[in-house]
Image (cartoon, rainbow over all chains, first blue to last red; front, side, top):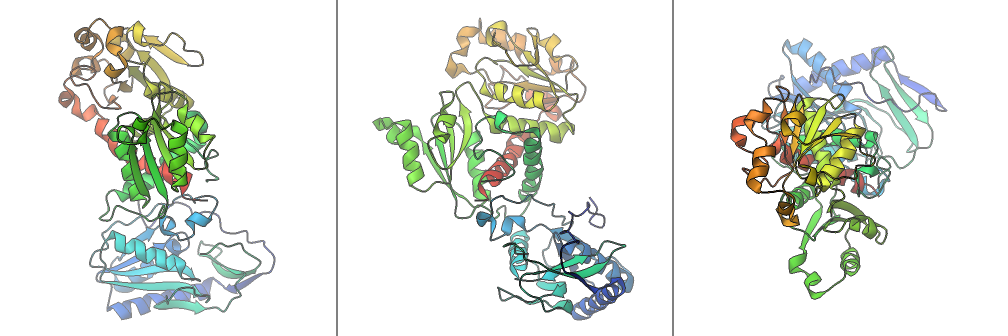
Length: 199
Length: 308
Protein backbone atom coordinates (compact mmCIF):
# COMPACT_ATOMS: atom_id res chain seq x y z
CA UNK A 1 0.00 0.00 0.00
CA UNK A 2 1.58 3.22 -1.19
CA UNK A 3 0.78 6.29 0.90
CA UNK A 4 1.44 8.39 -2.19
CA UNK A 5 -1.43 6.71 -4.02
CA UNK A 6 -4.19 6.07 -1.52
CA UNK A 7 -7.63 4.85 -2.55
CA UNK A 8 -10.15 7.32 -3.97
CA UNK A 9 -11.56 9.68 -1.35
CA UNK A 10 -15.25 9.57 -0.51
CA UNK A 11 -17.45 12.03 -2.37
CA UNK A 12 -17.43 15.52 -0.92
CA UNK A 13 -20.60 17.35 0.10
CA UNK A 14 -22.76 18.20 -2.86
CA UNK A 15 -21.21 21.20 -4.56
CA UNK A 16 -24.46 22.34 -6.08
CA UNK A 17 -25.80 23.39 -2.67
CA UNK A 18 -27.20 26.87 -2.39
CA UNK A 19 -24.91 29.87 -2.05
CA UNK A 20 -21.62 28.36 -3.14
CA UNK A 21 -18.86 30.92 -3.38
CA UNK A 22 -15.37 30.12 -4.67
CA UNK A 23 -12.78 31.68 -2.36
CA UNK A 24 -9.52 30.33 -3.75
CA UNK A 25 -8.52 28.98 -7.13
CA UNK A 26 -5.89 26.47 -8.09
CA UNK A 27 -2.93 28.88 -8.53
CA UNK A 28 -3.58 30.58 -5.18
CA UNK A 29 -3.77 27.20 -3.46
CA UNK A 30 -0.51 26.12 -5.07
CA UNK A 31 1.29 29.27 -3.85
CA UNK A 32 -0.05 28.71 -0.33
CA UNK A 33 1.13 25.12 -0.28
CA UNK A 34 4.57 26.15 -1.54
CA UNK A 35 4.87 28.81 1.18
CA UNK A 36 3.74 26.36 3.87
CA UNK A 37 6.33 23.81 2.71
CA UNK A 38 9.06 26.45 3.07
CA UNK A 39 7.77 27.48 6.51
CA UNK A 40 7.75 23.87 7.70
CA UNK A 41 11.34 23.39 6.51
CA UNK A 42 12.45 26.68 8.04
CA UNK A 43 10.93 25.91 11.43
CA UNK A 44 12.37 22.39 11.49
CA UNK A 45 15.70 23.28 9.91
CA UNK A 46 15.28 20.88 7.02
CA UNK A 47 13.41 17.63 6.59
CA UNK A 48 15.45 15.44 8.94
CA UNK A 49 13.12 13.34 11.16
CA UNK A 50 10.17 15.18 9.68
CA UNK A 51 6.98 13.11 9.30
CA UNK A 52 3.89 14.52 7.61
CA UNK A 53 0.70 12.88 8.86
CA UNK A 54 -2.59 13.72 7.16
CA UNK A 55 -5.80 13.50 9.16
CA UNK A 56 -8.39 11.57 7.10
CA UNK A 57 -10.52 12.42 5.24
CA UNK A 58 -9.49 15.96 4.31
CA UNK A 59 -5.85 16.03 5.36
CA UNK A 60 -4.56 13.17 3.21
CA UNK A 61 -4.40 15.06 -0.09
CA UNK A 62 -2.83 18.17 1.47
CA UNK A 63 -0.18 16.10 3.28
CA UNK A 64 0.68 14.45 -0.02
CA UNK A 65 0.99 17.83 -1.75
CA UNK A 66 3.18 19.23 1.03
CA UNK A 67 5.38 16.13 0.88
CA UNK A 68 5.85 16.54 -2.87
CA UNK A 69 6.84 20.21 -2.41
CA UNK A 70 9.25 19.40 0.41
CA UNK A 71 10.81 16.67 -1.67
CA UNK A 72 11.37 19.02 -4.60
CA UNK A 73 12.85 21.71 -2.34
CA UNK A 74 15.12 19.42 -0.32
CA UNK A 75 15.85 16.90 -3.06
CA UNK A 76 14.96 13.91 -0.86
CA UNK A 77 11.69 12.29 0.16
CA UNK A 78 10.01 13.03 3.48
CA UNK A 79 8.07 10.50 5.57
CA UNK A 80 4.36 10.59 4.85
CA UNK A 81 1.36 8.88 6.43
CA UNK A 82 -2.34 9.22 7.14
CA UNK A 83 -4.41 8.54 10.25
CA UNK A 84 -8.09 7.71 10.66
CA UNK A 85 -9.40 9.36 13.83
CA UNK A 86 -12.86 7.77 13.78
CA UNK A 87 -12.24 5.55 16.82
CA UNK A 88 -11.13 8.58 18.87
CA UNK A 89 -14.10 10.83 18.13
CA UNK A 90 -15.87 12.27 21.15
CA UNK A 91 -19.28 12.21 19.46
CA UNK A 92 -19.46 8.47 18.72
CA UNK A 93 -21.99 7.74 21.42
CA UNK A 94 -24.26 10.61 20.34
CA UNK A 95 -24.45 9.51 16.72
CA UNK A 96 -27.06 7.04 15.61
CA UNK A 97 -24.58 5.00 13.58
CA UNK A 98 -20.89 4.37 14.15
CA UNK A 99 -19.06 5.60 11.07
CA UNK A 100 -17.13 3.19 8.89
CA UNK A 101 -13.41 3.09 9.50
CA UNK A 102 -10.90 4.37 7.01
CA UNK A 103 -7.47 2.92 6.63
CA UNK A 104 -4.61 4.54 8.53
CA UNK A 105 -1.32 4.21 6.68
CA UNK A 106 1.72 4.88 8.79
CA UNK A 107 4.69 3.24 7.07
CA UNK A 108 7.11 4.24 9.84
CA UNK A 109 7.04 4.49 13.62
CA UNK A 110 6.25 7.94 15.05
CA UNK A 111 8.87 7.50 17.80
CA UNK A 112 11.46 10.29 17.90
CA UNK A 113 9.95 12.01 14.86
CA UNK A 114 8.91 15.60 14.33
CA UNK A 115 5.29 15.06 13.34
CA UNK A 116 3.45 17.66 11.30
CA UNK A 117 -0.26 16.89 11.51
CA UNK A 118 -1.98 18.06 8.36
CA UNK A 119 -5.66 18.87 7.86
CA UNK A 120 -7.52 20.82 5.21
CA UNK A 121 -9.72 22.89 7.51
CA UNK A 122 -9.22 23.80 11.17
CA UNK A 123 -12.62 24.42 12.77
CA UNK A 124 -13.58 23.33 16.31
CA UNK A 125 -10.22 21.68 16.96
CA UNK A 126 -11.84 18.39 17.93
CA UNK A 127 -10.33 16.40 15.05
CA UNK A 128 -6.88 17.62 16.07
CA UNK A 129 -7.53 16.55 19.65
CA UNK A 130 -8.44 13.07 18.35
CA UNK A 131 -5.30 12.93 16.22
CA UNK A 132 -3.10 14.00 19.17
CA UNK A 133 -4.55 11.25 21.38
CA UNK A 134 -4.06 8.73 18.58
CA UNK A 135 -0.42 9.77 18.05
CA UNK A 136 0.33 9.40 21.77
CA UNK A 137 -1.10 5.85 21.62
CA UNK A 138 1.18 5.07 18.69
CA UNK A 139 4.41 6.12 20.31
CA UNK A 140 6.41 9.13 21.42
CA UNK A 141 7.13 11.75 18.78
CA UNK A 142 9.60 14.46 19.83
CA UNK A 143 7.40 17.26 18.50
CA UNK A 144 3.92 17.59 17.05
CA UNK A 145 3.06 20.58 14.89
CA UNK A 146 -0.11 21.42 13.01
CA UNK A 147 -0.47 22.56 9.40
CA UNK A 148 -3.87 23.51 7.92
CA UNK A 149 -4.85 25.00 4.60
CA UNK A 150 -7.78 26.98 6.01
CA UNK A 151 -8.32 28.23 9.55
CA UNK A 152 -12.00 29.13 9.76
CA UNK A 153 -12.17 29.96 13.48
CA UNK A 154 -14.82 28.77 16.01
CA UNK A 155 -12.38 26.80 18.16
CA UNK A 156 -13.90 24.78 21.01
CA UNK A 157 -10.56 23.56 22.41
CA UNK A 158 -7.25 25.32 23.15
CA UNK A 159 -5.64 24.33 19.86
CA UNK A 160 -3.92 26.50 17.25
CA UNK A 161 -2.12 25.80 14.00
CA UNK A 162 1.63 26.31 13.47
CA UNK A 163 1.29 26.67 9.70
CA UNK A 164 -1.78 28.21 8.09
CA UNK A 165 -2.52 28.63 4.39
CA UNK A 166 -5.21 31.23 4.91
CA UNK A 167 -7.43 32.51 7.70
CA UNK A 168 -11.02 32.73 6.51
CA UNK A 169 -13.66 34.18 8.84
CA UNK A 170 -16.83 32.10 8.57
CA UNK A 171 -20.26 31.77 10.07
CA UNK A 172 -20.84 28.71 12.21
CA UNK A 173 -23.48 27.35 9.86
CA UNK A 174 -21.32 27.69 6.76
CA UNK A 175 -19.29 24.90 5.23
CA UNK A 176 -15.77 25.32 3.90
CA UNK A 177 -15.22 22.88 1.09
CA UNK A 178 -11.67 22.11 0.02
CA UNK A 179 -11.02 20.14 -3.12
CA UNK A 180 -7.40 19.27 -3.91
CA UNK A 181 -8.24 16.81 -6.64
CA UNK A 182 -7.09 18.10 -10.02
CA UNK A 183 -8.36 19.52 -12.26
CA UNK A 184 -10.88 21.30 -9.99
CA UNK A 185 -8.70 22.60 -7.17
CA UNK A 186 -10.79 25.02 -5.17
CA UNK A 187 -11.68 26.29 -1.76
CA UNK A 188 -15.34 27.21 -1.62
CA UNK A 189 -17.64 28.60 1.03
CA UNK A 190 -21.08 27.06 1.21
CA UNK A 191 -23.84 28.93 2.93
CA UNK A 192 -26.21 26.36 4.27
CA UNK A 193 -27.27 24.91 7.55
CA UNK A 194 -25.40 21.82 8.57
CA UNK A 195 -26.33 19.32 11.22
CA UNK A 196 -24.30 18.70 14.34
CA UNK A 197 -21.40 17.30 12.33
CA UNK A 198 -18.14 18.49 13.86
CA UNK A 199 -15.19 18.16 11.57
CA UNK B 1 -27.62 1.13 17.59
CA UNK B 2 -26.09 1.05 14.18
CA UNK B 3 -27.66 2.07 10.91
CA UNK B 4 -25.25 -0.24 9.22
CA UNK B 5 -26.29 -3.40 11.04
CA UNK B 6 -30.04 -3.64 10.71
CA UNK B 7 -30.47 -5.69 13.88
CA UNK B 8 -29.44 -4.31 17.30
CA UNK B 9 -28.53 -7.86 18.31
CA UNK B 10 -26.36 -10.62 16.87
CA UNK B 11 -28.33 -13.79 17.50
CA UNK B 12 -27.81 -15.75 14.31
CA UNK B 13 -25.83 -15.39 11.10
CA UNK B 14 -29.29 -15.04 9.55
CA UNK B 15 -29.41 -11.57 11.14
CA UNK B 16 -26.70 -10.46 8.72
CA UNK B 17 -26.86 -9.76 5.01
CA UNK B 18 -23.80 -10.58 2.90
CA UNK B 19 -23.11 -6.83 2.73
CA UNK B 20 -23.16 -6.66 6.50
CA UNK B 21 -20.79 -9.62 6.78
CA UNK B 22 -18.38 -7.99 4.34
CA UNK B 23 -18.67 -4.73 6.31
CA UNK B 24 -17.73 -6.59 9.50
CA UNK B 25 -14.70 -8.10 7.73
CA UNK B 26 -13.58 -4.69 6.44
CA UNK B 27 -13.92 -3.21 9.92
CA UNK B 28 -12.00 -6.16 11.38
CA UNK B 29 -9.07 -5.32 9.06
CA UNK B 30 -8.73 -1.92 10.75
CA UNK B 31 -8.91 -3.45 14.21
CA UNK B 32 -6.24 -6.02 13.43
CA UNK B 33 -3.79 -3.18 12.77
CA UNK B 34 -4.36 -2.17 16.38
CA UNK B 35 -2.88 -5.37 17.74
CA UNK B 36 0.52 -4.43 16.34
CA UNK B 37 0.58 -1.09 18.17
CA UNK B 38 2.27 -0.30 21.49
CA UNK B 39 -1.03 0.86 22.99
CA UNK B 40 -3.53 -1.73 21.80
CA UNK B 41 -6.54 0.27 22.84
CA UNK B 42 -8.90 2.85 21.38
CA UNK B 43 -11.50 4.88 23.28
CA UNK B 44 -14.51 4.06 21.05
CA UNK B 45 -16.60 2.23 23.68
CA UNK B 46 -15.42 4.24 26.68
CA UNK B 47 -18.10 4.37 29.35
CA UNK B 48 -19.99 1.35 27.99
CA UNK B 49 -20.36 -1.88 29.90
CA UNK B 50 -20.40 -5.37 28.44
CA UNK B 51 -21.40 -8.39 30.48
CA UNK B 52 -20.20 -11.88 29.58
CA UNK B 53 -22.87 -14.26 30.83
CA UNK B 54 -21.78 -17.85 30.30
CA UNK B 55 -23.96 -20.78 31.32
CA UNK B 56 -21.46 -23.17 29.73
CA UNK B 57 -17.70 -23.43 30.06
CA UNK B 58 -15.61 -21.41 27.63
CA UNK B 59 -12.06 -20.15 27.46
CA UNK B 60 -11.46 -18.73 24.03
CA UNK B 61 -14.85 -17.23 23.25
CA UNK B 62 -15.16 -15.51 26.60
CA UNK B 63 -11.54 -14.34 26.62
CA UNK B 64 -11.79 -13.20 23.03
CA UNK B 65 -14.90 -11.10 23.75
CA UNK B 66 -13.24 -9.74 26.88
CA UNK B 67 -10.08 -8.69 25.04
CA UNK B 68 -12.09 -7.26 22.15
CA UNK B 69 -14.25 -5.16 24.47
CA UNK B 70 -11.30 -4.00 26.57
CA UNK B 71 -9.36 -2.91 23.47
CA UNK B 72 -12.36 -0.72 22.67
CA UNK B 73 -12.19 0.67 26.25
CA UNK B 74 -15.48 -0.87 27.39
CA UNK B 75 -15.79 -2.14 30.94
CA UNK B 76 -16.22 -5.91 31.02
CA UNK B 77 -17.86 -8.01 33.69
CA UNK B 78 -17.63 -11.79 33.52
CA UNK B 79 -20.31 -13.88 35.12
CA UNK B 80 -19.70 -17.59 35.25
CA UNK B 81 -22.89 -19.09 36.46
CA UNK B 82 -21.27 -21.65 38.75
CA UNK B 83 -20.17 -18.78 40.99
CA UNK B 84 -23.31 -16.65 40.69
CA UNK B 85 -26.81 -16.51 42.13
CA UNK B 86 -27.85 -18.96 39.45
CA UNK B 87 -26.76 -21.74 41.80
CA UNK B 88 -29.19 -20.27 44.37
CA UNK B 89 -31.99 -20.83 41.86
CA UNK B 90 -32.28 -17.42 40.25
CA UNK B 91 -34.17 -17.61 36.96
CA UNK B 92 -32.51 -16.73 33.68
CA UNK B 93 -34.74 -13.72 33.12
CA UNK B 94 -34.16 -12.40 36.64
CA UNK B 95 -30.41 -12.72 36.14
CA UNK B 96 -30.52 -10.83 32.85
CA UNK B 97 -32.88 -8.13 34.20
CA UNK B 98 -30.51 -7.64 37.14
CA UNK B 99 -27.60 -7.25 34.76
CA UNK B 100 -29.56 -4.71 32.76
CA UNK B 101 -30.55 -2.79 35.89
CA UNK B 102 -26.87 -2.63 36.82
CA UNK B 103 -26.41 -0.60 33.64
CA UNK B 104 -25.05 -3.03 31.06
CA UNK B 105 -25.10 -1.80 27.46
CA UNK B 106 -24.56 -5.27 26.03
CA UNK B 107 -24.75 -8.90 27.09
CA UNK B 108 -22.78 -11.72 25.53
CA UNK B 109 -24.62 -14.89 26.36
CA UNK B 110 -23.87 -18.59 26.05
CA UNK B 111 -26.51 -21.07 27.09
CA UNK B 112 -27.06 -24.82 26.66
CA UNK B 113 -30.63 -24.28 25.39
CA UNK B 114 -31.24 -23.26 21.79
CA UNK B 115 -33.04 -19.95 21.36
CA UNK B 116 -32.21 -18.46 24.78
CA UNK B 117 -30.35 -15.37 23.43
CA UNK B 118 -33.27 -14.57 21.14
CA UNK B 119 -35.77 -15.01 23.96
CA UNK B 120 -33.68 -12.68 26.15
CA UNK B 121 -33.31 -10.09 23.41
CA UNK B 122 -37.08 -9.63 23.27
CA UNK B 123 -37.20 -8.90 26.99
CA UNK B 124 -34.32 -6.50 27.64
CA UNK B 125 -33.28 -3.11 26.28
CA UNK B 126 -29.57 -3.77 25.77
CA UNK B 127 -27.69 -5.40 22.91
CA UNK B 128 -27.62 -9.19 23.03
CA UNK B 129 -24.85 -11.17 21.36
CA UNK B 130 -25.15 -14.92 21.02
CA UNK B 131 -21.93 -16.69 22.01
CA UNK B 132 -23.42 -20.13 21.43
CA UNK B 133 -26.92 -21.44 22.18
CA UNK B 134 -27.48 -25.17 22.43
CA UNK B 135 -27.16 -26.86 19.08
CA UNK B 136 -28.38 -23.81 17.18
CA UNK B 137 -25.90 -21.03 16.44
CA UNK B 138 -22.53 -19.53 17.30
CA UNK B 139 -22.49 -16.56 14.92
CA UNK B 140 -19.21 -14.89 15.91
CA UNK B 141 -17.38 -18.22 15.50
CA UNK B 142 -18.75 -18.53 11.96
CA UNK B 143 -17.77 -14.93 11.23
CA UNK B 144 -14.21 -15.49 12.41
CA UNK B 145 -13.98 -18.77 10.47
CA UNK B 146 -15.13 -16.99 7.31
CA UNK B 147 -12.76 -14.12 7.98
CA UNK B 148 -9.85 -16.56 8.40
CA UNK B 149 -10.78 -18.23 5.11
CA UNK B 150 -10.97 -14.81 3.41
CA UNK B 151 -7.59 -13.71 4.78
CA UNK B 152 -5.84 -16.98 3.97
CA UNK B 153 -7.48 -17.87 0.65
CA UNK B 154 -8.29 -14.34 -0.56
CA UNK B 155 -11.84 -15.16 -1.69
CA UNK B 156 -15.00 -17.17 -1.04
CA UNK B 157 -16.38 -17.66 -4.52
CA UNK B 158 -15.84 -21.16 -5.86
CA UNK B 159 -14.19 -22.60 -2.74
CA UNK B 160 -14.98 -26.12 -1.52
CA UNK B 161 -15.10 -26.39 2.27
CA UNK B 162 -15.34 -29.76 4.02
CA UNK B 163 -16.78 -29.67 7.53
CA UNK B 164 -15.62 -32.88 9.19
CA UNK B 165 -16.86 -34.63 12.31
CA UNK B 166 -19.66 -34.20 14.81
CA UNK B 167 -22.03 -32.05 12.80
CA UNK B 168 -25.08 -33.26 14.70
CA UNK B 169 -24.04 -31.61 17.97
CA UNK B 170 -22.28 -28.63 16.45
CA UNK B 171 -23.74 -25.12 16.53
CA UNK B 172 -20.47 -23.98 14.94
CA UNK B 173 -21.24 -26.18 11.92
CA UNK B 174 -24.81 -24.89 11.69
CA UNK B 175 -23.71 -21.23 11.72
CA UNK B 176 -20.93 -21.97 9.24
CA UNK B 177 -23.15 -23.88 6.81
CA UNK B 178 -25.56 -20.92 6.67
CA UNK B 179 -22.85 -18.26 6.38
CA UNK B 180 -20.59 -20.12 3.94
CA UNK B 181 -23.33 -21.05 1.48
CA UNK B 182 -24.53 -17.44 1.42
CA UNK B 183 -21.00 -16.35 0.45
CA UNK B 184 -20.94 -18.69 -2.53
CA UNK B 185 -18.91 -21.48 -0.93
CA UNK B 186 -19.72 -25.12 -1.70
CA UNK B 187 -20.06 -26.95 1.62
CA UNK B 188 -19.45 -30.66 2.16
CA UNK B 189 -20.37 -32.44 5.36
CA UNK B 190 -18.11 -35.37 6.23
CA UNK B 191 -18.63 -37.77 9.13
CA UNK B 192 -20.17 -41.03 10.28
CA UNK B 193 -23.92 -41.27 9.49
CA UNK B 194 -24.75 -41.14 13.20
CA UNK B 195 -23.17 -37.69 13.52
CA UNK B 196 -24.69 -36.10 10.41
CA UNK B 197 -28.20 -34.77 10.99
CA UNK B 198 -30.87 -36.58 8.97
CA UNK B 199 -32.91 -33.40 8.67
CA UNK B 200 -30.92 -31.16 6.35
CA UNK B 201 -33.87 -29.15 5.09
CA UNK B 202 -32.71 -25.84 3.63
CA UNK B 203 -29.05 -26.86 3.62
CA UNK B 204 -27.45 -26.86 0.23
CA UNK B 205 -24.66 -29.31 1.06
CA UNK B 206 -23.01 -32.50 -0.20
CA UNK B 207 -22.72 -35.33 2.31
CA UNK B 208 -19.84 -37.81 2.47
CA UNK B 209 -19.45 -40.69 4.89
CA UNK B 210 -15.92 -41.38 3.70
CA UNK B 211 -13.23 -38.91 4.73
CA UNK B 212 -10.99 -39.52 1.73
CA UNK B 213 -13.81 -38.90 -0.71
CA UNK B 214 -15.09 -35.92 1.24
CA UNK B 215 -11.74 -34.20 1.46
CA UNK B 216 -10.63 -34.81 -2.13
CA UNK B 217 -9.75 -31.53 -3.92
CA UNK B 218 -11.27 -29.32 -1.27
CA UNK B 219 -9.76 -25.92 -0.38
CA UNK B 220 -10.57 -25.80 3.32
CA UNK B 221 -11.00 -28.55 5.92
CA UNK B 222 -12.86 -27.52 9.03
CA UNK B 223 -12.48 -30.20 11.71
CA UNK B 224 -15.02 -30.11 14.51
CA UNK B 225 -14.50 -31.07 18.10
CA UNK B 226 -16.04 -34.35 19.24
CA UNK B 227 -18.34 -33.01 21.94
CA UNK B 228 -17.62 -35.66 24.50
CA UNK B 229 -19.59 -33.71 27.13
CA UNK B 230 -22.70 -34.12 24.95
CA UNK B 231 -22.36 -37.92 25.01
CA UNK B 232 -21.04 -37.98 21.47
CA UNK B 233 -19.05 -41.06 22.43
CA UNK B 234 -22.26 -43.12 22.36
CA UNK B 235 -22.76 -42.19 18.68
CA UNK B 236 -19.52 -43.86 17.57
CA UNK B 237 -18.13 -47.34 18.17
CA UNK B 238 -14.94 -46.07 19.77
CA UNK B 239 -12.76 -42.97 19.87
CA UNK B 240 -9.92 -44.98 18.39
CA UNK B 241 -11.99 -46.05 15.42
CA UNK B 242 -13.28 -42.51 14.92
CA UNK B 243 -9.74 -41.17 14.97
CA UNK B 244 -8.67 -43.74 12.40
CA UNK B 245 -11.59 -43.08 10.05
CA UNK B 246 -12.17 -39.34 10.48
CA UNK B 247 -9.04 -37.86 12.07
CA UNK B 248 -7.31 -35.19 9.97
CA UNK B 249 -3.77 -36.42 9.37
CA UNK B 250 -1.00 -35.27 7.02
CA UNK B 251 -1.63 -38.38 4.88
CA UNK B 252 -5.28 -37.68 4.25
CA UNK B 253 -4.62 -33.97 3.64
CA UNK B 254 -2.58 -34.92 0.57
CA UNK B 255 -5.88 -35.67 -1.17
CA UNK B 256 -7.03 -32.06 -0.75
CA UNK B 257 -5.80 -29.07 -2.79
CA UNK B 258 -2.05 -28.44 -2.33
CA UNK B 259 -2.69 -25.14 -0.49
CA UNK B 260 -5.43 -26.58 1.73
CA UNK B 261 -6.28 -24.66 4.89
CA UNK B 262 -7.14 -26.58 8.07
CA UNK B 263 -9.38 -24.97 10.67
CA UNK B 264 -10.67 -26.12 14.07
CA UNK B 265 -12.88 -24.08 16.40
CA UNK B 266 -11.08 -25.48 19.45
CA UNK B 267 -10.54 -26.80 21.97
CA UNK B 268 -8.88 -29.66 20.11
CA UNK B 269 -9.06 -33.27 21.23
CA UNK B 270 -5.52 -33.94 20.08
CA UNK B 271 -4.98 -37.30 18.46
CA UNK B 272 -8.71 -37.61 17.69
CA UNK B 273 -9.97 -34.93 15.28
CA UNK B 274 -6.52 -33.62 14.47
CA UNK B 275 -3.46 -35.82 14.33
CA UNK B 276 0.09 -34.69 14.20
CA UNK B 277 -0.75 -31.02 13.57
CA UNK B 278 2.92 -29.97 13.71
CA UNK B 279 3.59 -31.93 10.53
CA UNK B 280 1.09 -29.92 8.48
CA UNK B 281 1.78 -26.69 10.32
CA UNK B 282 1.88 -24.35 7.29
CA UNK B 283 -1.63 -25.49 6.37
CA UNK B 284 -3.04 -24.90 9.84
CA UNK B 285 -5.11 -21.76 10.38
CA UNK B 286 -6.03 -22.65 13.95
CA UNK B 287 -4.03 -19.92 15.67
CA UNK B 288 -5.08 -17.44 12.97
CA UNK B 289 -8.66 -18.17 13.96
CA UNK B 290 -7.89 -17.11 17.54
CA UNK B 291 -6.00 -14.01 16.42
CA UNK B 292 -8.58 -12.93 13.83
CA UNK B 293 -11.38 -13.71 16.28
CA UNK B 294 -10.44 -10.70 18.41
CA UNK B 295 -10.57 -8.38 15.38
CA UNK B 296 -13.90 -9.79 14.21
CA UNK B 297 -15.44 -9.46 17.68
CA UNK B 298 -14.12 -5.90 17.99
CA UNK B 299 -15.80 -5.12 14.67
CA UNK B 300 -19.08 -6.64 15.87
CA UNK B 301 -18.98 -4.79 19.20
CA UNK B 302 -18.03 -1.51 17.52
CA UNK B 303 -20.73 -1.73 14.86
CA UNK B 304 -23.41 -2.79 17.35
CA UNK B 305 -22.53 -0.64 20.33
CA UNK B 306 -20.51 2.45 19.35
CA UNK B 307 -23.48 4.56 18.28
CA UNK B 308 -26.69 5.40 20.12
